[in-house]
Amino acid sequence: MLQRTFVMIKPDAIARSLMGEIVSRIEKKGLRISAMKMMQIPRSLAERHYAEHAGKRFYEPLLKYITSGPVVAMIVEGDDAVAAVRLLVGKTDPKEASPGTVRFDLAMQVGRNIIHASDKPETAEREIALFFKNDEIVK
Ligand code: DAT
Ligand code: MG
Image (cartoon, rainbow, N blue to C red):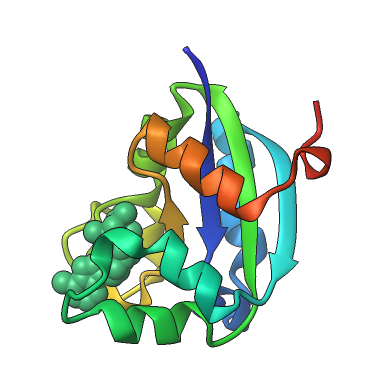
């Protein structure tokens, strides 16, 4: 089923010059990028994006991490795009992710796992609405 998902390249990936590598993996898989922008996330947007994690012990470090430098936000489209991108990204903790995934191949720690991808189609739509206006998305 044609679907869209929200992907964000996190600040340490930008700092480590891994943006191109990550975008390349998404493109090579055959997914399409229908919106993309570099931005510095204000704390208020980070709080809304990660609202489900409010109160957890990693919440404050997570907000600090995600607002520590520019990110690249994207909408990625394709057949079952949500699951496809989650598989390409790998498990949350790079120590548990499989070789060949972005998180295993390019990251070491759960608190620096370099990429975000929506976990469900409904989450994807919620996150896309937080980050993009309709006129920023190509048809
Ligand atoms: P995912 O990003 O795979 O959807 P999540 O939604 O459970 O994972 O958590 C959001 C982010 O919070 C995750 O990318 C990294 C951080 N995080 C999650 N669990 C953590 C933990 N146990 N310790 C430190 N950071 C954690
Ligand atoms: Mg999540």
